[in-house]
Amino acid sequence: MRSLELEACHIDLLDGDIAHVHFRDGHLVTPEEVHLMFEAIATERGGRKVLLLVSVGEGTTMTGEARTYASSPESNAYVAADAIIVRDFSHNLAANVFVRHNKPTRPIQMFGDKASAVEWLTQHHDLIDPT
Image (cartoon, rainbow, N blue to C red; front, side):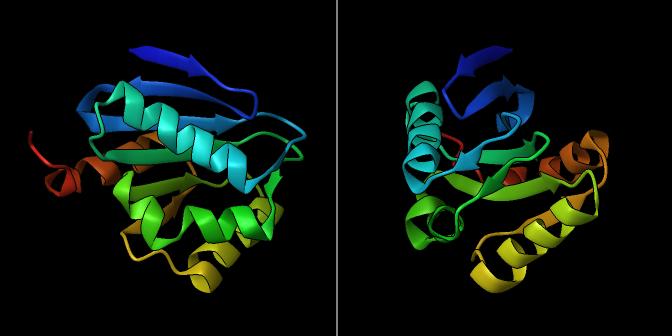
């Protein structure tokens, strides 16, 4: 497993083309930070898409612009499917806004635990380019 450290997040590149991104506690995530995260993953993977597992720390949220960018058609160049780990009610509400308002055009699902999220992501491995 390879790990990357960015100002906004920690990224673990897992087996099976999965990247676990954990946004740090108490952080307001900006579009620029989402872009830097995508670019760091793309660089490590030679431009290949990833199955993205997302978790956030206590008191962390994304700006509306960051959510818009993370769900944009441009983001589909980096991510094949998203699994979001929700830890509490407020985080569940924020994730629902992302899913229902921003409406990413790739598969996306919310989970209460990492194991279920990883299991779901592995079912979408066919969305990764085999090259």
